[in-house]
Length: 229
Image (spheres, rainbow, N blue to C red):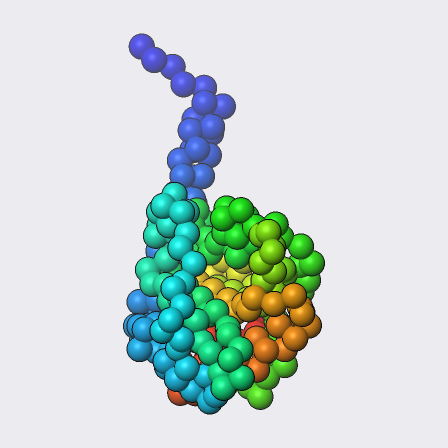
């Protein structure tokens, strides 16, 4: 005949309770399902302000391994090169994923660039001033042989801007406590130039022109409701 001590019973109850609590705290509702669907191809105009898509430029291709990893995180990606009347070019990349749960997270550009053989330097947190408010951004420089590429990017997790992995984790935790799974979007603009300061300013001008060309509802999806901090 099996005998169970009070201690064994209490340990069992605690274990069952822990499993139940873990399930209860597991986010279940995707906020992407509560929002209007995004279509990046139609959302971002091919021409706005002094900028238009440069059809002569083929976007930089990533390795098959990296592409497979990206496909697990993002539902949609958009990569274009724009040119203005001064023959200046900006590369735009936007990636959107409906699931930013605990084991899924936006890939920051520095990791993707390192995976393609670039060296990363001069990463800083900054604020990009636009007509639509100040956007917290991250800036860095990617270098490979003679190619020098200043990059400006920002990430939104559930509509909140996050500039690094820590801020992304904080944003996800806020939603998890409400039983929700946030979506995530990465906006990256870059240019090939050794004049880093001019590169960043050109990226700001481009970003502002792009935001100005969007309806308010789309614009809010790209600039969010502020920092996750």
